Amino acid sequence: QAVHKHEYDPPLAHPGEADLTSHVDFERLAGAAASVGLHVHGMLHQGDFLVGLGIGERASALGRNRDALAQQSILADVDRLAGAGAGKMGDLFKVLAVSGAPLSLFPFRQPD
Image (tube, rainbow, N blue to C red; front, side):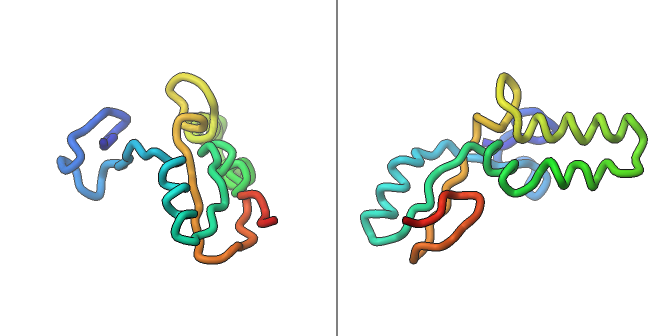
């Protein structure tokens, strides 16, 4: 599926301008990866992933020396991307990392 200007859009209607996503069975994908010897780092909600990567700190840096309206817009974008609840992507989308060998891959849990 595609989203263009915050609305659903046909996937091929605006190449390079729309966000594309797919419904993925992450448990099945992780199982398939593990079954061929790949290391599965686990799955995170998008919000946890972005917070772990420092979205709050990045938002602060972007908002520094900006007017109140720009700061509010940045905070609203962070909440939409990393927040939980209706219309927010933090819990809706997931992130899965797979590698050939165990890695220390932050913000995923460390290998045992």
